[in-house]
Image (tube, rainbow, N blue to C red; front, side, top):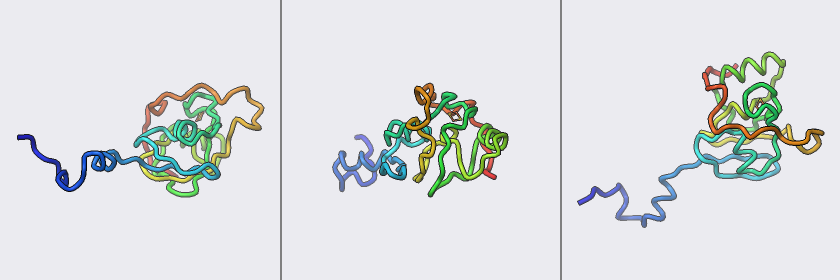
Length: 141
Ligand code: FES
């Protein structure tokens, strides 16, 4: 006889399934709050879940800084070396690169770099699902 999951006898499988697949929420100011697959790149979640025309001119490779966002809540305590170095090189403060952040907890951001009004023909190549360059994590400054 197969082992029973804890609580299986109290809740129907459909209800249990809802709680077995935790998803962080992403709130984008002015757009709403959305469930996001755990670990999804923030730039992709902003574009695909929230439907925001965020720029990602370098294709999510920590080179262009057009994917920048301002955090209102839930700013990650860690960052990639690539993000740290790019923000330092551009002397950018108060912003984070959404292509270098994973949605692994609830967060609220302001999308400050959008295709609309940018004069660009498109937002840039679609970023890969994994952080590029391969993530090397450090504590945020
Ligand atoms: S730095 Fe270019 S898309 Fe993030």
